Image: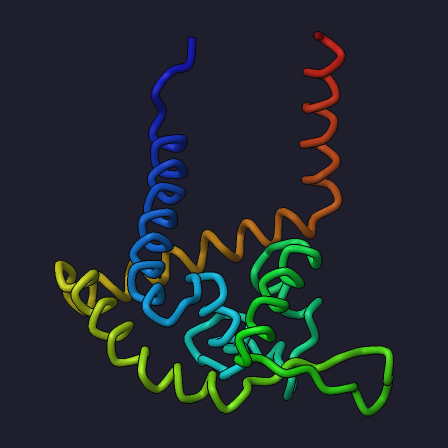
Length: 177
C-alpha cells in the first residue's frame, strides 16, 4: 500500500526529531512555568542571533504579533494565545506603536530578562550535550543542510507556479473520490 522511501523517511525523521527537541525543551522550561513555544517567543524578543528571523535582519525593536507568527510559522490567533499567557505571567509587555497606535509592539518585561539569564546556561548545556556526538565539521554540515532545506521550502511556498502545480494535483485527487 505505502512503500518505504528514503525521502519520506527523512521528512518523518525530521518531524520526530522536532517533537523530541520540543519535549526536551518542555522539561527544561517546566520549572519556570512556561512551554518551549513560549520560551522561543521570549528568545525572539531577546533578539537571539541564532534564530533565522533575527539573523536575517527581519527584526525591528519591539516585535509585532504578526512578525512573531511569521517567524514561528503559526497563525496569528495561535501566537496571540501564547502571548496572553506570557503577559499574564508578567514576562511580556505591550506598548503602542509610535506610527500606528492601533498596533502594539511586544517587549520583554524585566522578569523575562531575569528568567532568560537563569535558563540560558541550562539550555546551552542541554544543546551541547544533545549535539556532543558530532564534531564541529559535522555540525556545520548539518546546519548547512538544514538551512538549504529551509530556504528551498520557503522558496517553494512563495513560488506561485509550484503552489499551482501542487493544488492542481490535490484537486485532481479530490475529483477522483
